[in-house]
Length: 171
Image (cartoon, rainbow, N blue to C red):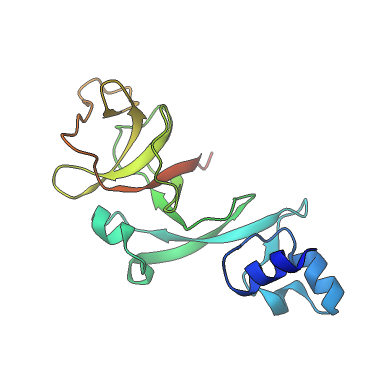
C-alpha cells in the first residue's frame, strides 16, 4: 500500500473500503476498530451504510446534512466511494425501472449528466423527482407504463441531486 493512499485515507480524500481488511491486518486490529460502519456481505464484499431518507425537497436532499430526514439506514454491497442516499419510490412515473415502493440508491457526488442515466432532480416546484436523462433536446423522461406522464424540458439545467446507481425491490 502506498504512502499516498494511506495519507488520502487519513485525510478523508479517499473513502474506499477495499483496503481496510489489509490495513487492519497490518495494524493487528479488527476492521471495525478502524471503521465502525465496515461490514462485508456473505461473499466478503464490503458494504456501505446508506441513509434511507424521505422524499423531501430536492434542495434539502442536496444539502450536506440530511440526518434530520433519515428514516433509518440500509447496507449496500459493492458501492464505489460517494455520498450515498437511499429513497423509497412513490408514484409510477418510473415503474418500468423502479416500481412504487422500490428503493433507489443515489450518489449525490455524481451530477455529470450522461444520456440514458437516471437522476433525482428538482422539478419546476423545487420538489424532488426521479427521471431518465436524454440529450438533444435536453429532457428528463419518465420510464412508465402510464402514458399520462410527460418529459420535463428544462429551460436551464435543473438542480441535480444525484445519479441513481441502483434500484431494488422486494419480491
